[in-house]
Image (tube, rainbow, N blue to C red):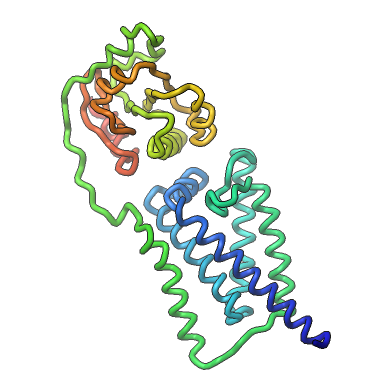
Length: 313
């Protein structure tokens, strides 16, 4: 194999490798797509509905670019310039995240498959940008009949894929939670022998009280969503009552970063279940004085509804 053939082979391998990184990045985000959308809400001005659609579009777009690189088609027209722009924008976004939130935690660039800090992801983007610059000057591009039609089909299919796998919650129509208006035995919190009473008087005024378990996967999702809502709307009176082995507490708060929500650890499973109204977790209760007004789950919880409720006498 002569030198020219070796170079062509090397550039072709680099093209495929670049495409595989984009595809892996897209596929790895799908299991945590829900939380990827929440990260967008937390770090941008977008609302929940816009963020969940943007999250799916970005995943589909990454997959589309990866396929173009692997197939060696439309590289200089579409794949290389658009991937360059995307990587630069992502890097600028990650720099903003670092300046605002620090370099802790997983940026979600590879979902939970490979945990990367924002700074590590920037380094990864710089390597990909270098690859793309090299390919701009030396890429091997295939041309064939009907390739425009193929690219159009690939683009539509790629963008549709994450929507089909995990449809956005906003496409579903949820019935508004009916008012319950029944007593909730919050006095247990203040009369328990094994627990110190909350520093907040939950039996007066309006509160959004969530009951969580430290080992509950969905409780962690609820905690993350509530934490983001509190960041966006500090006036919402969230309070968390958490049950579980204290040895799991550090892991729970490291994962959820729910440090902006007042909470208490409650010992006593039976009394905890009595206040919660059962053993299903998490529950999110809208409470006025000692009356349970309404319940939500973490997906149907809407801060605009809460703010509107808080304004009512």
